[in-house]
Image 1 (spheres, helix red, strand yellow):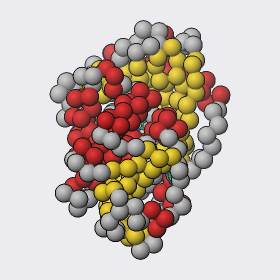
Image 2 (cartoon, rainbow, N blue to C red; image 1 turned 90 degrees about the horizontal axis):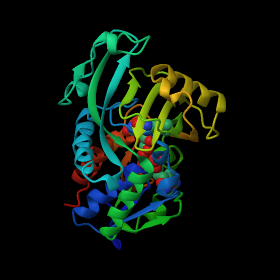
Image 3 (tube, rainbow, N blue to C red; image 1 turned 60 degrees about the vertical axis):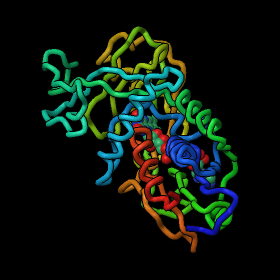
Amino acid sequence: MGSSGEWDALVIGAGVSGLTTAIRLAEAGFRVRVRAARPPQETTSAAAGASWGPYMVSDARVLLWSEQTRLALEKLSEDPATGVRLVRGVEASPRPVEAPSWMRGISDFESCPPDELPPGYACGWRYTIPLVSMPRYLDYLVNRLRSANVSIEIAPISSFREVSGLARLLVNCTGLGARSLVPDDQVYPTRGQLVVVDNPGIDHFFQDHVEDEKLTYFLPHGDHVVLGGSAIPGSESLDPDPVAARAIVDRCAAVEPRLRDARVRRILVGLRPSRSRVRVEWATVDGVPVLHNYGHGGSGVTLSWGCADEVLSLSGLQ
Ligand SMILES: Cc1cc2nc3c(=O)[nH]c(=O)nc-3n(C[C@H](O)[C@H](O)[C@H](O)COP(=O)(O)OP(=O)(O)OC[C@H]3O[C@@H](n4cnc5c(N)ncnc54)[C@H](O)[C@@H]3O)c2cc1C
């Protein structure tokens, strides 16, 4: 670990990974500070859908981290102020495939009879998962940090050396920013776009079981529904694409016709921090020991509490 400073830990990054990690460390009794280039509501995390479920991510520990996070989110769903709610819905595949093991672990998991699937799908499953309204959830995480006396400083860092004397532990939760900060050329953006519409009365989710550039899913969040989506590897643009947005609405309306004329509130665009595998490990960068927690791809919310637990156990603070 680095030289001792005023803080036990400095967490760099204020997306879902940084905030959750900071909560775990602070609630374990350590003096923690967060520093980030952008505030929580301006991160990739704020643009996520967000449903629980490992997607576009790899690491042997992903299933464990996902399961740990599901349990944590289920607990948080008891308080509506968190923005987390448990919702039952359908996941369907255009090809006949086995249900993944993580899905079969959900207590109310069942196969969906073929005659109850939307047109064009060969098989599907029903289950209940946490859906997370990210703007509200990020506010909840910030408030929980405030209660633990953790403040968030908005200022970028250009190297770990710059902050190495400030805390005993540096945790790197910079998402896509790790590409230039570490630097790590395994990190790349996968652009995603969502359309937020008024909710015409939908109380279940739907998502297709594909890892494709064009996705079809809708996630109800009370008075609005988040429609998805897209996954374009290598694209850096944060500009909304109106043609792709119309196509998202059309794909979702083919599954749920009530969505066809729903009023569009906004279009969200974010860059998933993709990597060949999630990076949660110690490394020495520029002579400075850093505990990394980045590269969560399309599953940063799904992995957040599991990875925060992993950081706490690897931290050496306890
Ligand atoms: C359209 C879309 C839909 C998604 N849907 C889901 C979903 O349904 N379920 C799910 O689990 N995941 C989903 N994801 C993925 C999820 O959003 C990401 O995996 C997650 O947000 C990554 O969080 P993070 O905290 O690691 O990174 P970010 O949210 O990007 O936060 C990174 C933080 O690091 C800071 N930072 C970067 N560089 C520096 C620097 N040099 N100095 C200081 N600070 C720095 C940033 O300012 C920011 O505060 C989706 C993503 C998109 C785009």
